Amino acid sequence: MISLKNNRIDKIYSYDLRNGTDTTARQRIFFEYNELGRISRIRDESNLTRIILFNIAYNAKGNAEKATQLTNNVQSNEIIFEYDEKNRPTAVVSLNLIGPNRTIEYDANGNPFRITRADFGSLATINEHNFDDKRNFFEGIPDIQLYWLLRPLYSFIPFGSNNIVGTKFYSIQNLEFKEVPDIRTARETSYNEQGFPVTMNIILENQGKTVTSKSKFEYNCE
Image 1 (cartoon, rainbow, N blue to C red):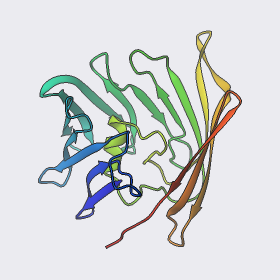
Image 2 (image 1 turned 90 degrees about the vertical axis):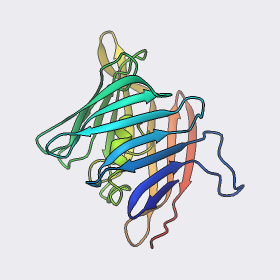
Image 3 (image 1 turned 45 degrees about the vertical axis):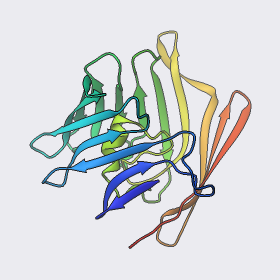
Image 4 (image 1 turned 120 degrees about the vertical axis):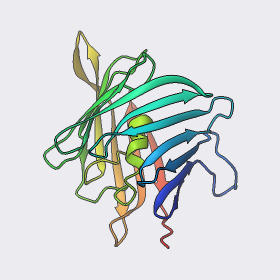
């Protein structure tokens, strides 16, 4: 769940509404803002024995340019953000070996259709998306973009104008990227009259097996 306060993200947390308890994949992410209204800190308390803090620094254009990561109050990484001439993020680079490393490419409509991941300890991969013509699920809460750069929300991308319809996956094979033909995802989304998603089915085909994830969205607009 995403909790807003004064139209800004206050926290992200996982919760089982039916049973009124935390979910197994427990999330507790808190946001703090500076006097200019920009995110100054993101604090991850999902694991209370390993609290992660990101301190954010900005450039003259107002873009986040660096996140200093502390784990249990000990600096563990510095993460640099790069942008194109339209101020869209194009790269996330960890200065330490362990951390996120990815590039983002945009299509003619401004949607991030190709994302290359080269995180330490993992083989490089590419996710290639296509999009619908509906407005982005996160259009009203742009603050989520910075969090996505640090901790990708794999089901959604809060950049661009539209939402993902399907995804193809590529991996390194014989020193070049080739599509993995038996892994891909498709999405079936219904929208309300205001253009916001109401239901979403994410269908994953993986080596002959099909898994469907169903989501339902509710909005509390005050």
